[in-house]
Image (cartoon, rainbow, N blue to C red; front, side, top):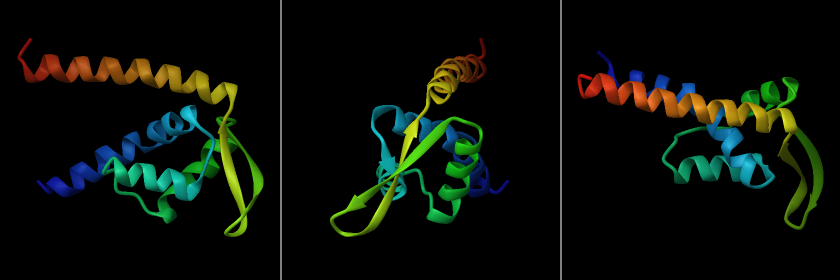
Length: 109
């Protein structure tokens, strides 16, 4: 078993959830999202993030606006929509259930 591949697949499966969670606290542009993910040791690169943000926007989970930046070109700030907040709430519940299920399996319950 290639443990690194399994770990990468686990991260990939939770990345969209993490993006919604980050945006539930504050609007952010892509570099801020990447920094927060890296600070949490969720390894991600821009080439992975942008397609996810586009998909979530197309699903109505996110919207965005352009803001002028004092350090360079305008930045695209992403915002969680009402639908995105509803999906995040559902994912929070699903995450709690998953943790509970894994704990029962690990503990032989």
